[in-house]
Image (cartoon, rainbow, N blue to C red; front, side, top):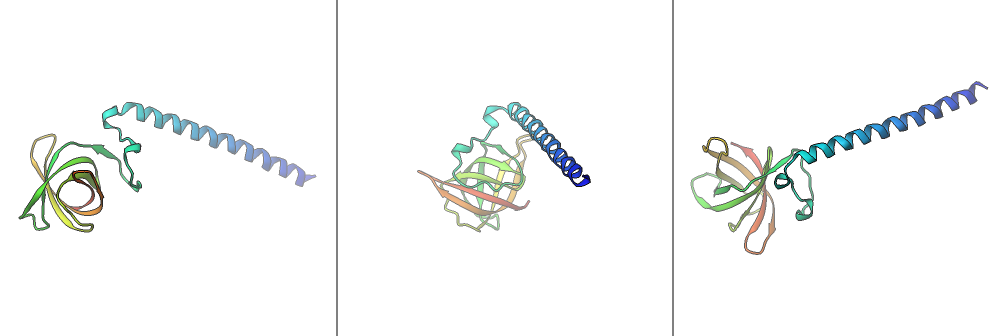
Length: 143
């Protein structure tokens, strides 16, 4: 008799736990929708326009800054690039400059707030061919 009572108690607990979990997921989904609505449409990243697999650990923001690309030593200017988006760990940019995967580079860009020059060191982690230029993904290695 006690085994039957225990199994009913366990079943009741599982059902209640399922409802609590479903309620938690629903609340979390609603919060994410609220956050998404607060982000302006121009700052949203359209996942349909990105063909590479996402493996990000940090969020990213859109950018339209012009970058000056330099070699690893920072002495030779290789060309310019257009920033597409940036995160705390790396960036994506478009450039006619030919870079190789794993190549170390430096890039200069104007800071948006005070207009000062930022010098960032990075490594090319991926590249995709475009019509007139190439799209690159870089990971920051130091400043």
